[in-house]
Length: 75
Image (cartoon, rainbow, N blue to C red; front, top):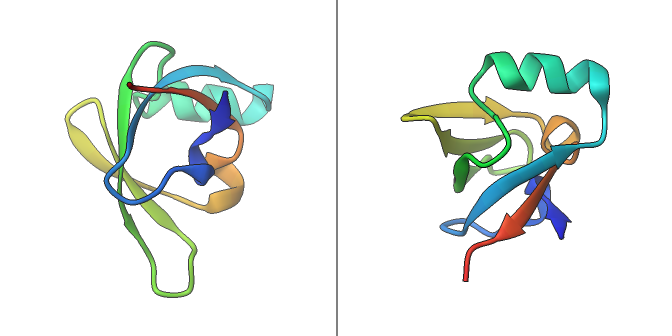
C-alpha cells in the first residue's frame, strides 16, 4: 500500500484509508471516500499541487494532503 502522492500521472488506485483524522474529514466531504477510484491527472510544474479525478470531478490537492490518503493500486 502507498499514499496518493506516490502515484504517477495517469495511474489509478482505490482509496483505502487516511493517516490524518483531521484531514480525513475534509477529504471525505470532497468525495474522497474509502473504496472510491482516484486517478492522478496532473502535477504542477514545480511538483505541487496535484490534480486528481475522484467522484466524477477534478480535485486539486497539495502533496502534503495527498500523502495522508493511503491507496491500493489497481492491477
